[in-house]
Amino acid sequence: MIIGSHVNFGSKQLLGSAEMAVSFGANTFMFYTGAPQNTVRKDIDETLTKKAKEYMEHHGIDINNVICHAPYIINLANKEKEDSWNFSISFLKNEINRITQMGINYIVVHPGNALKLDRMEALHNIAEAINNIITPETKPMILLETMAGKGSECGINMYELKEILDNIDLKDKVGICLDTCHLNDSGIDISKFDEYLKEFDNYIGLEKVKCVHVNDSKNVMGSHKDRHANLGYGTIGFDNLINVIYNPKLKDVPKILETPWIGEYPPYKLEIDMIKNKKFNPNLEQELMDLYK
Image 1 (cartoon, helix red, strand yellow):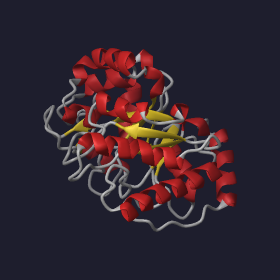
Image 2 (image 1 turned 90 degrees about the vertical axis):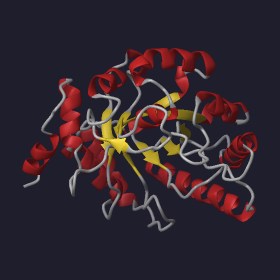
Image 3 (image 1 turned 135 degrees about the horizontal axis):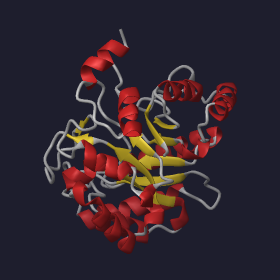
């Protein structure tokens, strides 16, 4: 099982991210190369990257399973202000260059918000933007994330994702990241996940799924809210999420926790223990407080 969580990318960069992942008992992780809400970025330190790769190899983390997430400020869907659209393209190109430097193979991208645009036009804008970003030489794969349908989000179902994929020139360089909270909030019943995968396979192809974000949801199915909950503490439920994580069709796909911190502390070590033991922990908050005392 390839399991990890979101981790920080601070002063020690990839090395610090790897060290945090190991402290959680993970064998993969996901990171942003800077704050997800702004454009401030520090140069990639090649010495720290080299140390990170040595550390990961020693601790059994395959860099081929490590995921980067693009910042939220990127919006490839709306082209009304062409300068803003071009900025999103340029910034995502820069993020791809940064992870290429580090040898990371995947970057998850929120497809974008249509805002006042016609949705079909917005979907085609996303594809056009990606066609402007990737070249035959691009190494990392862009993973379009399934979205909850909050506001004017694009990519809220497999039909919208397929519309984007169908209009991308270099199709082998674009995949999909499933998010369980987003799927639930968009209207997918996670208790029938096998049925969803079968339909997805027929329509898009399961080989396109390269990452799964594992999150419970604070909202009911179809709410279009996108509010993550801790494992087993939401409306999806622990057993349904375990069935997603252990689904044999996704055996070799990295699973990444993006569940909320509890107070000041990340819950990932205890949630990863839950996953490995396949046993719900009803005392997560108290045990987390004890862990970080």
